[in-house]
Amino acid sequence: MIEPSPRAALDAVPSYVPGRPPGTAGNGPAYKMSSNENPFPPLPSVLATATEAVGTMNRYPDMFSVELTERIAAARQVPVEDVVVGTGSSGVLSQTLNAMCDPGDEVVYAWRSFEAYPIMVALTGARSVQVPLTPDGRHDLRAMADAVTDQTEVILVCSPNNPTGPAVRALELEEFLGWVPPDVLVVIDEAYTEFGTDPAAAEALAAYRRHQNVMVLRTFSKAYGLAGLRVGYAVAHPHIAMALRKAAVPFGVSHVAQRAALASLDAYPELLTRVDAVVAERERLLCALRQDGWAIPDTQANFVWLPLAEQTNSFAEEATRAGISVRPFPDEGVRVTVDCPEANDIFLDVARRFRRGGATS
Ligand SMILES: *Cc1c(COP(=O)(O)O)cnc(C)c1O
View 1 (cartoon, helix red, strand yellow):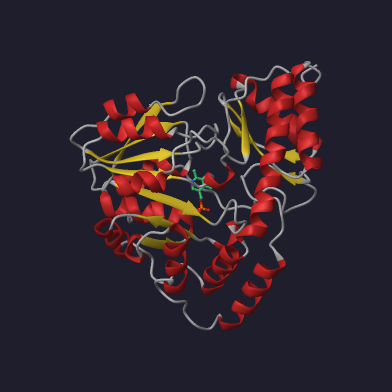
View 2 (cartoon, protein in one colour; view 1 turned 90 degrees about the horizontal axis):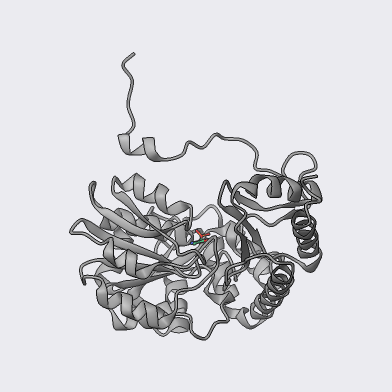
């Protein structure tokens, strides 16, 4: 049969079969600890602003999110020209790769890392060059620099790394940037940076200030709790920022998202107490799990990584039975989002029983 044929590049992209997400039908797990979301409901002030903004849904939003862009530039102390707001930082990353990559180009990143990376790279026709993490779940920056060839257009650095947790350190990042050719764009994805407590961790904005080939991705989805509204941004040097704007879907960031992000910046001190609560729970989990003998890598994010290898799926099933959903990566491990204390206690309990063998007997 003769029919329209999609690009061969799509063969490498996993097929999505439409269906209800888990938990929307019947009685699924009570706690969703699988998507690294903020467990707190929206702040009343943010909810009120967003609700009011819905009232103009017959109008297109401000295409370039001018007010939000200015507010972010002021908050981060960077030029307005360098800020590009988009539909979540994954949206901005997709713009970045579309703006930078031709078929045959290479994009280097650590693996395992954010699942969206291989999909977005494949869609541009570029080739993914995946550099294995170190045994403790960290980026192997020496090996990543060594993987650069004449075809390399972009390097993605995920710090803290999703799903393992460690952040890249300032000194190692600076050394790495000295190895990378100046015509290779280094994208530092800081989706979880607000949860970081390690003073030695790299600050991507400091690296962007020192290096013309560095850009930073930030999101309102995690610490700011706006995952459902799709808003994030890049801080990039002007000619890259301009290219990102050209690669945007017009009017992608809704008026509701823009107003809610502005309200969230206003409410940041209040949001920070929630971030602190998540961090305190993370430390409690880490401490308890390590005491029980689990080898958990350092985490500077709102999740912990259990390197369960071939026991991954049985752990995930056990968690579901106990009323929590976690994120399994078959044969590698399970990523568990820090939630409220009650949910975290259920998780600890599952982990304890599993270690004692109670789960598999
Ligand atoms: C969650 C996440 C993002 C943010 O995605 P949004 O599109 O902003 O919701 C980006 N990078 C990583 C590594 C993430 O885990």
